[in-house]
Length: 329
Image (cartoon, rainbow, N blue to C red; front, side):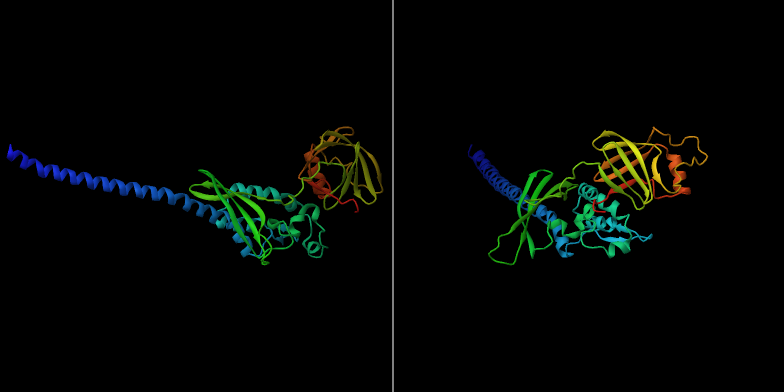
């Protein structure tokens, strides 16, 4: 019996020591896990802040750039969205969702400015093109014509596993002037990277939504027409005007009905059939016009005839789009 006790004592002691060591190891492991859990949210918020402010870091560093207007190969204006979007993508923190929104925001100006000769643009008075391109006359992402000394980030939030936000504040040098809220940046996680999906201004006037109104004067680079309640007067030339009836489809669309009511001192070529069987008929719809983003888009029902007219008579009469003409013109 005595020998048995002597044999068991070391085993009990050894087992007791192992149990204590395991408890110590478990305690350390639990402490390490707890530290990691505490650390992860902090690191995540730092990543959100870093990526969320990356756009304004770039914007301030590059002196608040707008999308540049350059001269194209034909001497017309071109909004250089290619370079702009390339710069944004190079940041690595801008989502395609944001770029899609930017492309939509810039579309009306890009389409309009493409009709303007670059030499005319260079010599234009201030705000000459503000109907379609008002954003080129000020710092769009500041909603101002003046810029602050710097900016700061506040209210960094992780909203869910893949959504976050933060606020951008403008900073001024005057010590008694508080930081001014500028915009809220929204982010989403894409393949483990937080990317900017939207920037919305805080307490700033957004670009007003254009009132839907088809009436008034519309132009391309060659002709203009005036849309009324029941008719459209098409000015092919200063000495040639046609009066076409219109049929309203809805607030955004109408059809132009072909007619021969005119006051024209020369042959403008609209009576030519160009050897085609399908030509515009009096009393039948000739085209449908649709208003979108303050641009009037034309869909022609006699496509072959319009193509022949454009090739043989004048390519700048029946075009795909028309822009609002200021009433003082």
